[in-house]
Image (cartoon, rainbow, N blue to C red; front, side, top):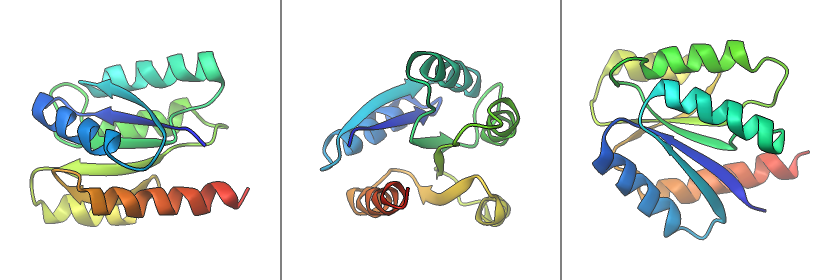
Length: 136
């Protein structure tokens, strides 16, 4: 089953590393890359309009110019009520204990990952997504 992964990160090197890790995985992915939270929301609207679904997985940076990752999550939750929301994994280059605590308790966040995304962590994500999709 093909999954759609959306990378939302304003750091081009991080975008490339995350995309590369996903491409090298055993999963079957369509990958969308966005440089801002605003662009991420626009991509979600476009995907919903074209395929009637949101991305399956979002890899989200929290610290971005303009709309922060937290603002993106707030908008995602409010703008797409009634749709199955994606699994969101926070990718962060900073060890911020308050962000980790908030992320751990946030109902939309499935996990918190230190950059860069590793193959072993991606394999765990794919295993969880497989369980989730087989439950339906």
